[in-house]
Image 1 (tube, rainbow, N blue to C red):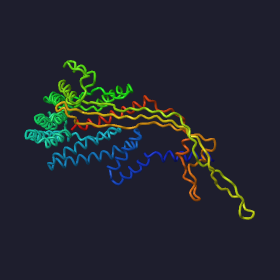
Image 2 (image 1 turned 180 degrees about the vertical axis):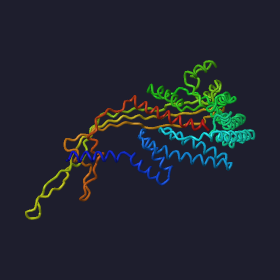
Image 3 (image 1 turned 90 degrees about the vertical axis):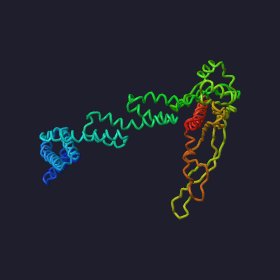
Image 4 (image 1 turned 45 degrees about the horizontal axis):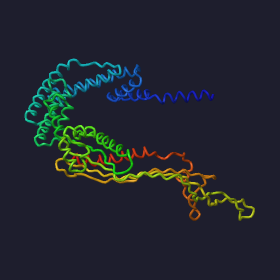
Length: 453
């Protein structure tokens, strides 16, 4: 009997999890009440779940035919009332509904007699809209033209060159604005306008060439000089220089052309100049101007200190909780358990490695030989490792005694230090890489704010 009962429950669950029976019941109820739209929708959903449901197919055939017939009646009404646009949209709604039912295997009766009426209405309507859109273009009313051609595309995107004209209604204002920005020598704005056009249509007029021209005129050449190392530590300057160049390139600013050391040396060689002669903003500006740069970046490391603190061991105080039973003050009563604390010592082993730096940079304009941006970056970056050990019950340790009769807050962070896996300090190499990336980003952010403006 127990097995039979469980089987019945399982069958009932399967039935309750199948919504098609409920949909069929609701669809039949709607059909009897004459709500064919709702009924057809229920039958359609059944066929989405069960494509071969015979009763749902037959029911959708009946109810869907009523719905489609009503849609055609509305189309005919709009035609008689000469509401051409509404009639066209209604016919497209009929077609969409027909295809929807067809997608679940139900072919509704299609009223072929309305096809020629629709084609005549569509062609006449689209023709008038097309002429209206062209008139807007000729009068430079591009926003209104875009509305008209969008309407045409909804009805018939293949009609004449409506798609091309829609593109023109978008691209032409950008093209005219781009030309104006070129004339005003606002080359960055011009580049952005022509870039949008090229993304839409690379062959539109001469937008591609104008984009290249605007980019060339808007570009800012930035020469990055080697980092001057004023410390005794070798290697950091080379690593920092590489990171600065990489950081500037990674910004992907189309208007910024970064010229690194190797390219600078070649360009200077052609002018019979050497890198060693560039020692101050004035000489940097002169050299940069000769080779066609707009800015030169000079960077120097004035302080660089690595410090390692060896392994240290500290004995620190803590308080361990423990339970104690005391006799009951009530005659023949049970003993009471109370919590007491005892002062203990635990061992904290720790190491520290730090890196202190002081970096100075100057952005020099080759046109004026003036320092247009500069800053001193200084910071201490460190890594510290602690490894705590205790021979007793770590879970009973507290960093402080309770206040009054309340237990101290649960010291999760305090206790976790005893469970940490011992790790090595960050290596000097990793610390150097982290610092170089940070310095390069700070310099890059400062320069881009200036150059973009």
